[in-house]
Image (cartoon, rainbow, N blue to C red):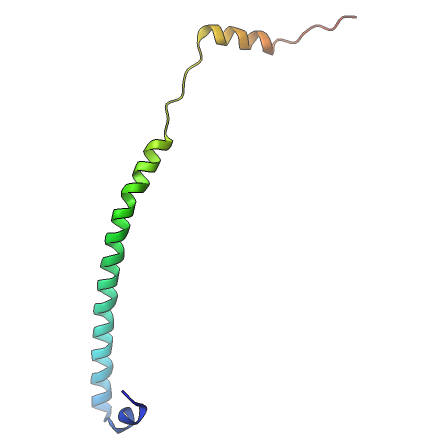
Amino acid sequence: MAKNDLDSLSIEELAALRENATDKLMEKVAARRAELEAELEKLSQYDRLAKKSQVAPVAKAKKSDDKKSEELKEPIAKAA
C-alpha cells in the first residue's frame, strides 16, 4: 500500500488496518514458532544420543595395579 493511500484513510480505517496487521503478524509469529519448536524437537534426539555416547563407564583398577601404584608413590631413599 502506498503512502498516499494511507493518507486518504480515516482514523477508524487506519486503526482497523493496524489491528488487522497486528493480528496477521501474531498468526505468522505463532506459526513460525511452532515450526521452530518442531525442528528443535527433532534435533534434540541427536543431542540425547550424543550425551549417551559421551557417558562411558569408568574402568576400575585391579588390585595388582593398586599395589604397583602404591609402590611408585613411596619415596626412594637417596644414597648418601
